[in-house]
Every structure is written in C-alpha cells, then in structure tokens.
Length: 241
Image 1 (cartoon, rainbow, N blue to C red):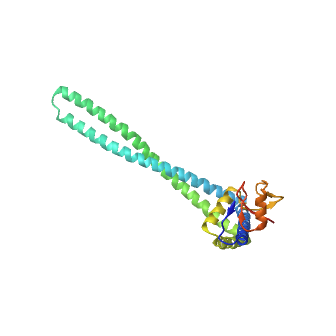
Image 2: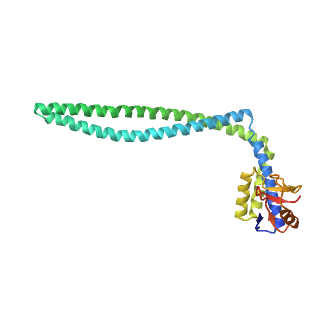
Image 3: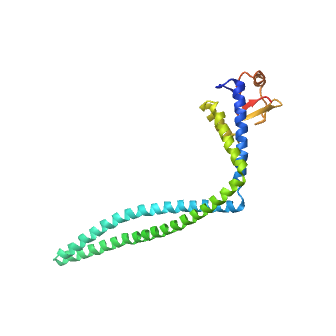
C-alpha cells in the first residue's frame, strides 16, 4: 500500500522511525516503573481490592435505596387503604356489613404488614452497607496514603527513568506535531494492533514484522524511495536498512 504523506517520503519515514524508537523507549521505562517492589505491590493490590468492594457496595446501596423508595410508596398506599377500612368499621352499624368490614380491615392490615417487613429489612441493609462503606473508605484511604508515601520514595530512587520519561514524552509530542492527525491516529491504531511495532525493516525480501515475502514491484518502489509503502499483509510501514 502506498501512503500519502504530509512531508516528503524520507522526512516522513525518518519521523515515523524516530517516533517508533521513542515509544519503544517509553515502553521500557513504563515496564521498569510498573515493576513495583513487594511492599508497594501489596499496597496497590489492597487499594484496588478496596476500590472494587466500594464500587460493588455502592451499587448495592443505590439499589437498596431505590427499592426503599418504591416500598415507601407502597406502604403509604397500604396505610391509606387500612385507614379507610378502619373508618368503615367504625361507621358500619349493620351486622352483615360490619363482618365484611372487619374482614376487609384484616386484609388491609396484612397487606400493610407484608409491605412493612421488607421495607424494614431494606432499611437495615442500607445501614449495614453504609457502615461497611465507611470502613472500606477508611481502609482504602489508609492504604492509598501508605502507597503514595512509598511510591514517592520509589520514584525518587528511579529519578533517571522519571526524567527520561518526561523528555521522551515531550519528544513524542514534537514528532507527532510533524505529522497530520490522520497519520498520528493511524500510527497509534497500528501500534495497538501490532504489539507496538509499526515501522519495520525489510530483511531478505520479506517484511520483518510478519515474515511475508514482498512482491517484486514493492521491493522496486522501496529502492526508489519515492513513496512510503506498507506491507500488504500486516500494513506495517516498510523501510530498507
């Protein structure tokens, strides 16, 4: 595939190769700074576990509160129905009607109780979840504070890598500024799909990224150097070493 370039072919290829190398170095530094010592790794796991539990219990709490709102409305209606049935008992004088009114009142009382019981259980659940969340938040905050303190020491011990990362990130910004947004987007999309390897050399007539033999016309165009070419198999950008 032939790519259209914002610069001339050689300048674009040089920029892409430089960007590739910059991201490779950044990846190495990222791995080094991500390799936490055991004490930091334990705290990091503790923080993440607490955050997961907090998220789960927060969701459960929100669900319980929503259910309480529904049950409160049901209880309000059930209480009104019971009050009306009780009033009917008081105002009924005929024996037949009185018996029916009593049965109606008993039914409304049972209905109100059937709503009140789960509501009470939900309120207890909300209280329990709230207490659990308070404890989890305290545990997460304590673990995070310890992690931040030790991580600051860890970064200070790896000051060269931290500084190098800043320098490389600035270089990445400069290099990407030499390309169009479309070219930058394509580079990162391909990097994500090809394990970070976007620009590869041609070795023994084959793409060193996927080891597929290149067609003669592609090799001829590469030697001419008039256009930026990609592998027809893996779409990586090609260059002759």
